[in-house]
Image 1: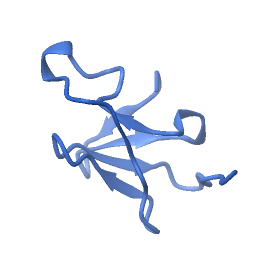
Image 2: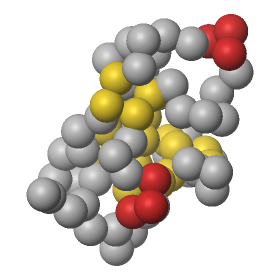
Image 3: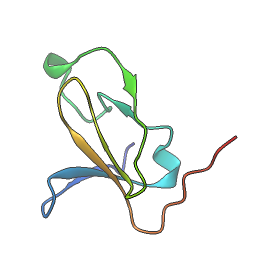
Image 4: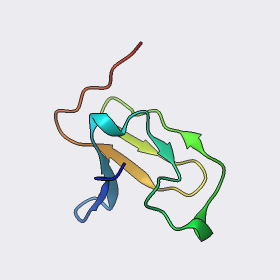
Length: 68
C-alpha cells in the first residue's frame, strides 16, 4: 500500500489491485492509532469501511477484485 493515498473528495484511502487483499490499519497509519488487523471486504461499489476506526477505503476506478 505504498501508493495508497487519501482522496480529498471522499476522504477515503484509494487502493489499486496491487494493494489487495486490503487490511486496516494500513502501513501509512501512525503506530499510535493501531488496532487489531482486519481484512476488508469491498461492496459492489468498491467501498469498504474499517469496523474499528471507521476509515473508508475505495478501489481506484477500473480495479478488478480477483477471486481465487
